[in-house]
Every structure is written in structure tokens, then in C-alpha cells.
Image 1 (spheres, protein in one colour):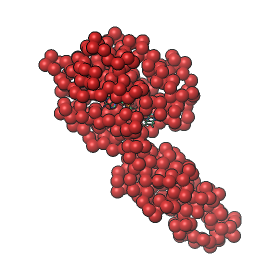
Image 2 (image 1 turned 180 degrees about the vertical axis):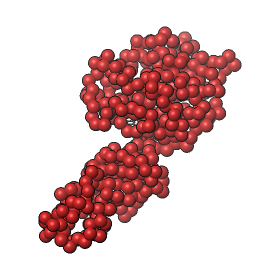
Image 3 (image 1 turned 135 degrees about the vertical axis):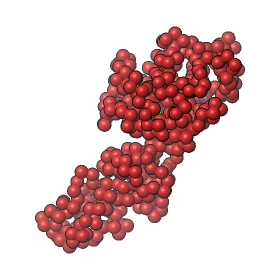
Image 4 (image 1 turned 60 degrees about the vertical axis):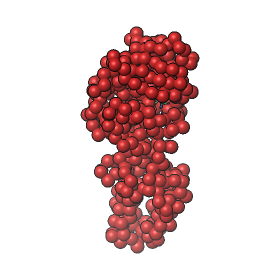
Length: 402
Ligand code: FDA
């Protein structure tokens, strides 16, 4: 990882971005005998990988399928995902004896640390004699007359026949995210769909926020539904800004400003039946005491503070009141204010229009030798290892074609 020397000015392939997709693509190309350099603006490669999965990197998912990816062109991801699958990446992990486990819903995490994944990618790059140049400021990209590209950085100019852009999305600017990939796309007349934060906590308006903030840190089982009918059954976490947790991060990919969400706080229960039964078996019990057996007490108190639940015994509940309670706790409608934005988002929705990219090779259809891979494209996965699998699969597709 030495600085660029004037001697190293021509490569078979230049990869911009030493993240998941860029490192993996470079390693594959290097091992095929290509001379490869990776240029990155950071002082360390794989910074998002190191932060991912709470430091344990959820590197793939056992249940990868195209339906778990969001794109204006939903068929685009199919070919790459089919040609380099989760099983291929798991095989690589096994070759390096990296211990891992399934946490939930097919999500595979390292037992020890995300560093295991970065070290494996760097070792793979080393096997392919890939050069990695860090702290690079890319100043210009030019297409030369003979199908070559010139890349200008503060260290000078590099010439290459194949240029792979793997600069990722805009989430977490503190980890090196920049719009360079989108700017390069625009330079080559490729449309870019508007971007927005994905897999991101949601914020709430006052006065609901004042109530919810008092529950900060409490997590409950839930089923969350978007206005378009997309549903995720995972935990919701109350925060001092609003809502987070896996169910909320997942639904944030499908939520747009101004829309509502429906939260089922008792998924899998029939509250109506439970209340009807309890009314005859424990008629003198307070409704609040009964509901507090099903939900954390502080969450139940929130609904009492907002005067949404009745202060009565179970015997006093009419069927209509039972139905109202059932409706409230199974279909609590919330209109979020906004998202926490790129500062805390795990991914970026939108990006380069994939209609202009070959789904088999990741090459730009109108610009020979220019490739885009990973999150910079308009392909965004669910929470749970899907985004890394897209990075590996799209990187492999490009490497295989080059
Ligand atoms: P990535 O962002 O990895 O790499 C882009 C690289 O380009 C970076 O090294 C960046 O510094 C460099 N770059 C950007 N602009 C540049 C410029 N102007 N000049 C030079 N270099 C530039 N996914 C998942 O599947 N499982 C998980 O557990 C998690 N967890 C997670 C946690 C957190 C906190 C975040 C922020 C994200 C995740 N993700 C995730 C998402 C996952 O990290 C993401 O989808 C992939 O890293 C995308 O890989 P790319 O290689 O496309 O971009």
C-alpha cells in the first residue's frame, strides 16, 4: 500500500473504491493474471465492512433471492446473483477457516470480527499482486481515443484499458462516502436515479416523539407494513429520535416522506380473542394489567398517556371497545416525520440506471471498458447480508467479463 510511484503508470485494470465490491473484483482480476490497482480516498481499505454487522459483518444470507433487492429494473440483479451465489462466498469463507454462524433469518455473521473478512479480501488481493493506493484524490477521468482511460489523482496520471467504478453509495460520509461514482456516470451521459437514505432509522413528529422518546431502548416484536403493503416481521426499537430496529430499517427502504406505516405490536396474537376470554375468566382485572402481560409495561403506559386505552376493568369492556383495542395494538398507524438520513443509513437507494449497464458484465453498454459494480448502481438489498452479496456478485460478474 505504498504511494504511487511514477514507474507504475499503466495497468490492465484500475478499480476506484477499496470497499467490498472493489476489493473483491480486484482480487479476482489479479488472480486471473491482470495487473490491477485499486484507488481509494480513505486511509484504510474496507472501512464499511469493518463497521458492518455491529463489527461482525453480516457477509451474506442463506436465502438470497432477487425479490429481496429494490431497483427500478428488478430483473437486473438476477444474472449476477445466479452466477456468484451466497454458496460461492461461503466456500471462500470456509477456505480461510473464518468461523461464522447464522444469527437469524439466514443471516451469516463472523464469530470473531469483521476484520476477518477484510483480511481475507486483502490476502486474496495479495495473491493476485493487486496494488492498493490509499488517500487518493481522484481529480479527473478521461476517455482517450484508443479505448483507454486516463485517471488523474494528486499523484499523477494512470492509464488503463478497463476502469471499474466501485465507489459505493452516500451513506455514512464519515467512512469515505462521496458522489464520485454518480458524477462519473453523469460524465458519460448515464442517468442516475435520485438517491435517498435506506436501511435507516425513522424520526417522529412531536407530540408522539415526546411519548416515544421515554421508551428509548425498548425493543418489541412487531410486524410493520408500508402503504404499498410491504411487510416485515422483526423487532422495532424505540429511540430518542423515533423508531429503529430491524423491522423499521427494512421498511424504511419502502417508505417515502408523507406516508404512514402500520405497526402490529402483537403479531401472531389475537388480542380480541384473548380479551374476550380474559373478560370472563378475570372480570375484575384492570384492562391495563392484562395488556401489560403481553407488552412491556412502559409501552402500555404510552397508550394510556395518549388516552388511547380505556381505564376500566375487563368486565366493563364492551365488544366494541375490545375491537377498538384490538385494532389499535394490531394496526397502530404512525406517520414518521423523516429518516435520520445518510449519517446513520446503512445503504443508499437509487443510483445509476441499470438499463444502461449489461447485467451479465456490469459494463456500460455505450462505453467500452467502463464498469460499475456494488452499491453505486440502482440495486439495494434488504437488511441481512443482501447488500454485501450484491457487492460480491456484481464484482465477480465484472471480473469474469474483463
Ligand atoms: P463501499 O461503500 O463498501 O466501498 C466504496 C469505497 O469507495 C470506499 O472505500 C470509499 O472510501 C471509496 N470511495 C468513495 N468515494 C471515493 C472517491 N471520491 N475517491 C476514491 N475512493 C472513493 N451490508 C450487509 O450486507 N451486511 C451488513 O452487515 C451491513 N452492515 C452495514 C453497517 C453499516 C454501518 C453500513 C454503513 C453499511 C452496512 N452494510 C451492510 C451495507 C454495505 O456495507 C454496503 O452495501 C457495501 O459496503 C457496498 O459495497 P461497495 O463496495 O459498493 O461500497
